[in-house]
Structure formats: C-alpha cells, structure tokens
Length: 160
Image 1 (cartoon, helix red, strand yellow):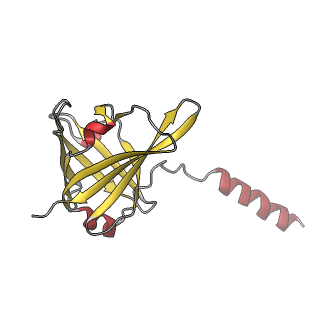
Image 2 (cartoon, helix red, strand yellow):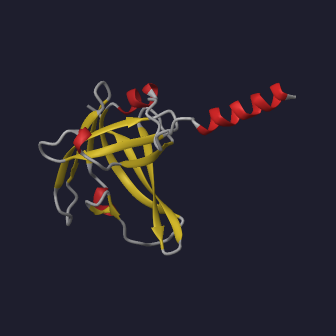
Image 3 (cartoon, helix red, strand yellow):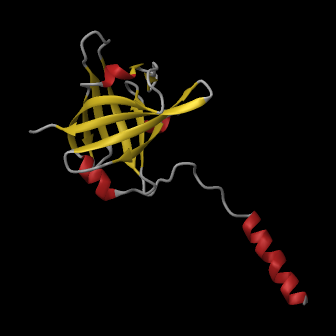
C-alpha cells in the first residue's frame, strides 16, 4: 500500500514539474518546406465565415492588397521576401523568415531593415492547407464582431 501511494505521489510530482512547451512547435516539416521553395503569387484572398469585412493583413495593408503580391521562399535557410504591387494599393516589400512545423502551421516574421529574426519580437502563425507542387493556401483567423472568420490566401507557383 505504501509503495502504491509513493508511486502515485511521484507520478503527480513528475507531471507537475513537466517543462513548459512552446505555443508553436518548432519541429520542422521539411517536405512541406521543400514544396514551398520558389517564387509564388497570391492569386486570391477570400473570407470564410463572413461575407464582407475589411482586414488589415499582417498590420501592413488591406488583405485585398495582397492579391497579386509576389513571394519568394528559400527552404534551405528559411528566408525569403514578399512584395505588394497591386494597383491602388501602397507598394510594400519586406524580407521574411519562415518555417512550416509538424502541426501544419506556417510560422513567419517580417524583418525590419537591419534587424535579425531573433530581434523581431512578433510574428504570425497561419495554417497551411491544400498544398501541392503548384499551389497552397495559408489560412489566418480574424475576429469579426463576436465571431471569427478565416482569411484564405491562395498561392500559385510562378513558372520560371
């Protein structure tokens, strides 16, 4: 009986001392990353869960301004760049750092001029979906009143 109680107490202590885990897994999905390598264009931005609303994506511009934006992903060092160039939208470009984790999340940071990723405190976690050799989607969530909606960025591979 004493041995059983001792084992139960030790089990509880072991669980209580479990180290905290990161909110975003850093275990990489190398296959997904290799499929993203190259030059891409966002062909559309759609809203799921709400008909019409306005979203400022990544604290940069209206989400519709991301249509026609150009993205380059380098998989061997998880860097890249993006350029907004849609008519009637402000031009914008940034270096990025990114990775795809085993949970199916695309984790990305926009890098300010002269700052490294480790000195950039915030980033974005989007779900990756419907990935093929020539297209994939990044899905973000946005609050719409008391509900939430998904913003779906459709990427298409550019031919070289």
